[in-house]
Amino acid sequence: MGKLAESLGVVPASKPCRVASILNELDSEDRDALVAGCNKVRQVPAHQRSSHRYPYTEMWLIRALRTQGFTLSKDSMSRHIRGECGCEFA
Ligand SMILES: [Zn+2]
Image (cartoon, rainbow, N blue to C red; front, side):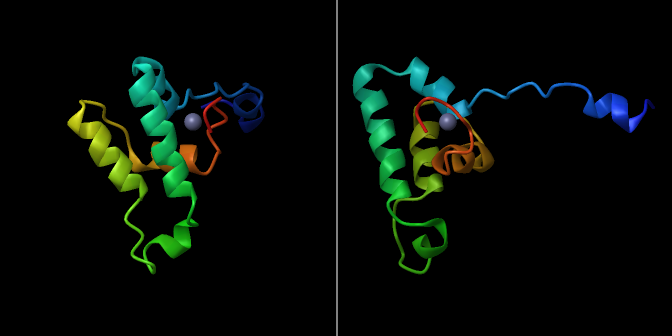
């Protein structure tokens, strides 16, 4: 095991956003629909979605994408929804 200082000296590789990579594979109609879907989820803050029975959630997007053969984790989707992924679509 090396020293912590060595480990922290390595610049972290930026992980590409999974949602962005999916968006890049879609045609323009589906891309617009997914961007609109993300905005729909963002309209209500996460902590209010369950208490208001808001139907548009990260899982709603993930399930729809799964039917089209795209898999991604809830973490990846949440990061994108919160704009923490740093991708151009967030
Ligand atoms: Zn993103």
